[in-house]
Structure formats: structure tokens, C-alpha cells
Length: 146
Image 1 (cartoon, one colour):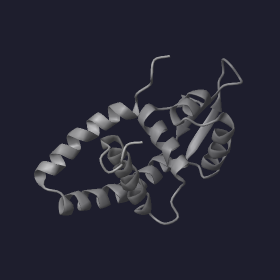
Image 2 (tube, rainbow, N blue to C red; image 1 turned 45 degrees about the vertical axis):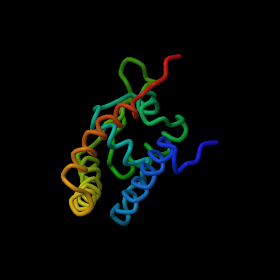
Image 3 (cartoon, rainbow, N blue to C red; image 1 turned 120 degrees about the vertical axis):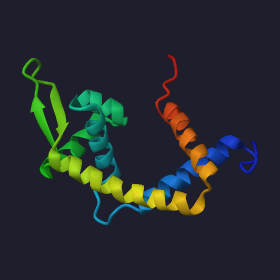
């Protein structure tokens, strides 16, 4: 097994996980769950989705999604509507309140990240990080060929 200190993949993974933990710790107190925020973020980016599409996007089991959607709907952060074509299908959309909750959470974490990058990194390091973020987005959306 390679030594994690010398393994670039292990170093990348460790730094991604550490930054993720730090960003989660900077969330406002009483915030929505990370799963709930993920759903709101997906609906904000992609628009209304059928439940099976949303489950796929979030990589959640339908049973887990059902519980999360019930909670989000109760808080009026999403709406659910049965399809007129296929009554088994349910469309899920983010509400104005859901967008507000999402934006408030993102604003707090973005502010911390911006402050940290400005204080801890040089201009060149920030530029490198911005370039790496585009590459990391490609990795995040990678699907292996079957």
C-alpha cells in the first residue's frame, strides 16, 4: 500500500475531505441538513425534476428521498405535483423560500471561503485553485462507461 504522504491521490482526497469538513462547520446554526441543501441546489440548477431524476442526481435511494422531500415540503421549500400524464410520476420544484434558504446558506460559506483564500493564499495560488476547481468539477461528474 502506498504511503499516503507521498501518494498524490491520497493527498488530494485528504485535502478535499478536510475542506469539505471545514465548509460544513462554517454553516449557519440551525441550517437545513446537507441532504436537504443538496436537493435544493440541484432543483435550483436544473429546474423541476421528476422524483426518479432527482434521486439519480442526488445519488439517493427513493425511500430516503421520500422522507427528505416530505420534510422540505412541510417547510415550504419545495412543491410536489403529480404528472397529468402518468399519475405515478411526481414533479418536484424549489419554491422562492427554498431559494432564499439555499442562498443564505451559500452566502455564509462563500464569505468564509473568500476570506480564507484572501488571507491564506497568494494571487497565484488562488488562480491555480480556480483552475483546479474547473477540473475537479469534471471529476465530480465523471461516469465510468458500462
